[in-house]
Picture 1 (cartoon, each protein chain N blue to C red):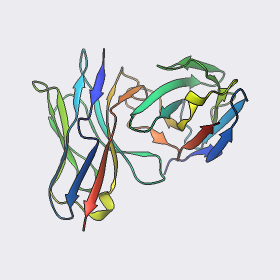
Picture 2: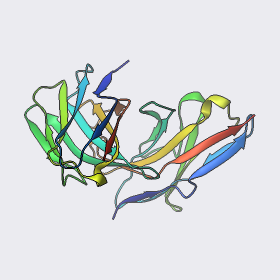
Picture 3: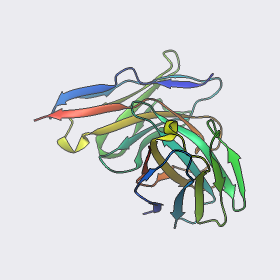
Length: 114
Length: 114
């Protein structure tokens, strides 16, 4: 079974601080994604990447940066964390191409910004 | 704009009863539709997916969904629910051929009465 591992599982950050969320996949997938889930809402795409050393903006990229240093690793960076960024963050990976079958999600990182 | 609406935030059914979770979509073009399930403290997992073709698609654990172009719907059904189906269910539509760029509905939390 494909595996996507996120760290940390939960984090408390202070307003204005820097936060880095990490994601590691052992699926040998080319595509990786960061989604945000707010209570009572569906997931929204923040950033994604098709290949190492390249990232793309999703639907809600403001306030976030992404880094894809290798095929296996994809980080989400909050340079100046804000209260509104309190949410659960999910990383996912998928195989390349239209024949791709599904997204594989990590367990999520619960971020609380105080 | 493309969107997905799940009109029922919460649904409660008795174990052994039938289930329908509703999903309406707004999408220009050919939709590729998905149902994902999120069990407690886990990431999302694919239940089933629809590609243009047979409107009724079968998924895992006895779930099925029916696509209706005329109603812009993709409702999820199960003939007999089990307590292990207690979870949050998300409907999603693909924004393009890259299935990772999904638009999610708000989710429906399913509770099971013994």
